[in-house]
Length: 532
Image (tube, rainbow, N blue to C red; front, side, top):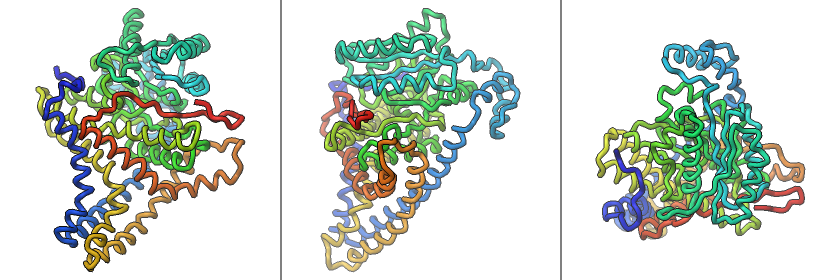
């Protein structure tokens, strides 16, 4: 059985360190390439820049098409009668007013043996909290209760940290006391820091998962029929989320080898967040909607679900990384020798955009959040070590393509915005007498002008996914929701690109992120006051 733990820092050999450094080395090399090519021959730099831009132009068109498709899927799936469809699966007869694929699913299920009935499925919800206020946590619990699903078939766990102090413990226990009657079982679970753990979410939800395992054993509940969803304190699932996951679970022949990934939508407080944060939040929602259609690229992110027996076999989540969500895909992939997939759930989990108590703190918190996400580049070394240099039965062709996509994704994250924005000016800066260098900014400008048409797709997505405007805002706030997109070049470079470069450069020099930096997500109260 392949060891799926991240090596402790003292145990990382030179080979492991090389692969940790690889994303950063490639990113800095690509950023230097326009300068190097210009010094060799300006025409080489011109060809490189134009080719790179044209590749991204085609990719942008494809992403715009995917975004429109993804929005249609989101809209359709939010209108489906999921509970009626679940009953059809149990009765093996399609009666619900649903798309044709539902009848096909029912017919296929009728040919299988040992199908789990939806009524036998139990959902466990782990809500991780550090020091968030009741105003943040309570709406998340209420969203779970308001689901169009029988909450008496649900288990609620509020996972809190001992280091948060007595106030955090009292808040978690009071919330459980207030709402435990709504659920099959509800408990506040204390996590005590353990040796070898970094300070982060992974240790917290893993401690909750282990206590959930004990409860299921005591109650003689089959962990294979328990689906565990992890939520951050501000995550509010769509009312049909649990029904939809149950539907997918019942259709899956071997659900142990599957993760279920809903679409994160950062819209809870989108009207309250500053304009740059609104642009980033919408861009993140936009990107995750696209990823839902690219199943070969889909990974666990933020809120996600897995069966309890799979979690037991992976010893729950990693306690050695700040990106325990995305890393969980690789843990499961290697534990089951490559037999693992992520199924998209085209229903939103509504989340908060970054918002702190003042503008500067909000900007800083946003950068830190994206830097933490970009720390997923650390998985490059993990995948290389476990996949190529450890004994395993993972299909090597599949592993190679997954590894290359992982590496390319993180390098592109870091370099693409900078190359697209500034590389056209490098040849003329270093060689102002070159005709090709002088023509390059003109050519690039014209291509970029055509590519800007894609912004209308983003505007459409942004506008259609906006929640209703709070009464405290006047009509002109809607106008700002449109013109905010002038910030897009700034946010893409200053937050996305620089955050990825920061993470990758830290990996080059071994300056590891040793703790999970909590993202500020303040709640705006009726008096327009912000409360974390």
